[in-house]
Length: 142
Image (cartoon, rainbow, N blue to C red; front, side):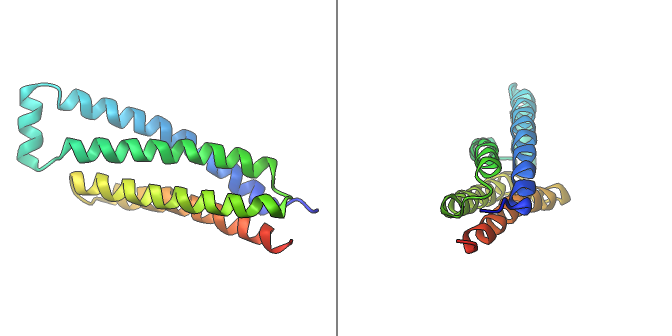
């Protein structure tokens, strides 16, 4: 069995994206908690139409997806030559992409769509899709 360089690269990108995702979700949660922890913050959030409940739900799902990216990246890096494991990696990559899309929709629904939302969708969904495609290529080698 020949090792897949593309899956190895996609796995490393997944691990890096997952680590960045966990850290950024942590900081986003802290920032929103600080901003809405007092009465004035809650009033300000209500005035601009910010929904903290949706935001927190989106952040929780995004954190789960980010941890999944790290796990999938490690699995992909360790099994980048095994077509039998590639099918599992494809399913994991697709599930992470769906979770990332759901979390982005929730976070956008909590406030509004901005350019950073577009970048978040591209990175949150694009990296797992790239990983899934790389795993698919390995599965075709079976």
